[in-house]
Length: 97
Image (cartoon, rainbow, N blue to C red; front, side, top):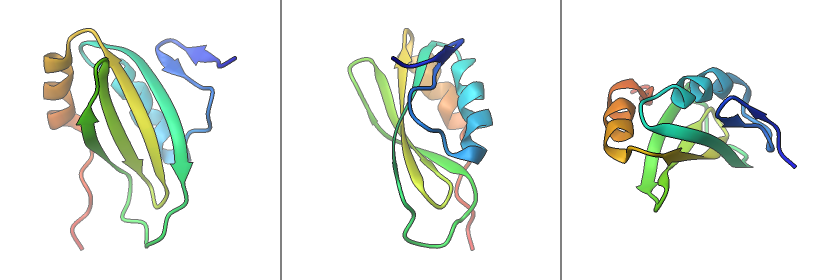
């Protein structure tokens, strides 16, 4: 059984630098739950912490949290349009080297 802190489910590990970002996401408009998922080991150099929206799901969004390794993150939303607007404004972007 997973543990939840507010809206953030902590059943799986969370990539260290991503915890604060996931907590911010849990406070975004329309977000009812943040569910961290599978982690895949990184294959290239780390380009800092950034997050991308992979696709929209029936209940919200699937995101990828990049820190060198990649973690799946699922957002469950009551208002997907408000959440999408927040994500577009607030998600960290990859560094351009």
